[in-house]
Image 1 (cartoon, rainbow, N blue to C red):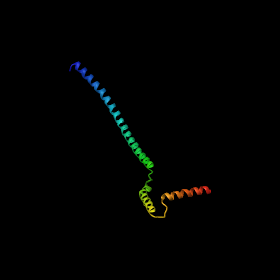
Image 2: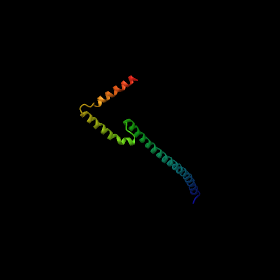
Image 3: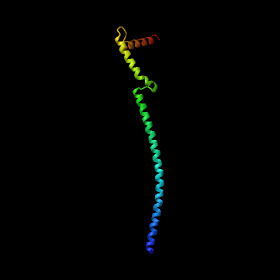
Image 4: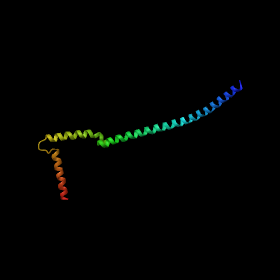
Length: 115
């Protein structure tokens, strides 16, 4: 091997060794960044879950929904109330819902006047 070839070979080896050192550093940095990405993904998942729970709660509050145990009774209670209203309106001589509400308002105003 000629001295020129030997010098070129040493130059190439020096460049490769510095490049390998850079690759090791990049590998360590990429590993750290992957860890941060995993943590951010977990945090994003937690935030999405919290946002979904808050959206459900807001829908419940806007819709006037009852909490879980009482929500089971909501539909049957509405059915009973509508059926009772229909029965009361079918019976002659009994006051209807409007008349009952008016009578109740009058009794409240009389009670306030007496006090």
